[in-house]
Image (cartoon, rainbow, N blue to C red; front, top):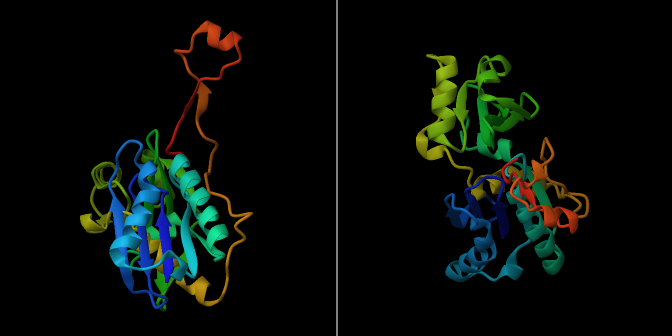
Amino acid sequence: MILAINTSTLQFGIALLEEDGRVTAEYFMSEKKGHYGSLMPALDFLFSVSEFNIHSVKAIFVSKGPGSFTGLRVGLSAVKGLCHALGVPVIGVSSLEALAGQILESSSAVTAVLDSRRGELFAAQFVWRKNTLLRQTEDVCCKIEDFPALFPNPGILIGNDYLNQALNIMRCFGEGISLAPVHYWNLRASSIGFAGLDRFRLNDFDDPNTLDPVYFRPPDIRPNPFASASDSFSGKKNMDIDKAG
């Protein structure tokens, strides 16, 4: 049994897959403030309702980014702890690659985008060749208005926020851009699982001690403008953290 976890987006998910890729159970949580605290209860729920024992897990696949700063830290920390406790290997999966893989066997290029907040996107382009998804570009972080210059031929566009990403990118391109069906516009944990299966079959695992998130930029940490002068003099550090970069 494979356990796959995605916390790289504000919609997190967990899935159980057989080694041949069949999805046995999947849990998806839509965006909600502070919802990453539901990760471990959701994991317990998934095993309870599927009637599988967590000790049947042979490997854990986890989204390594790019994506939510807080989500990636939470997910990778939880997975490293589980791998240590269960004695199983880990595979880190590109969030953009897994998202692009939801468009199966397309004859066109697939461009995947994830929200980076502040009017920016994480993006990369992929193509299918002989049943294999191949990367065409490296991951980038760009402003929405710069997207057409970086991806002049986006092929099929898929992301994790249909209302904002699809409409805004369409405005930049005008006509001539194809959008994945709206129900595809969520990165599912099962897609993290599919993306890691080939490496699993080759025993190509990551070292949990060196597996780090792909951030692309440091978190937006700055002094709290509402902190009192006494807090500053006492050495207390009130910080705001951008949880999506």
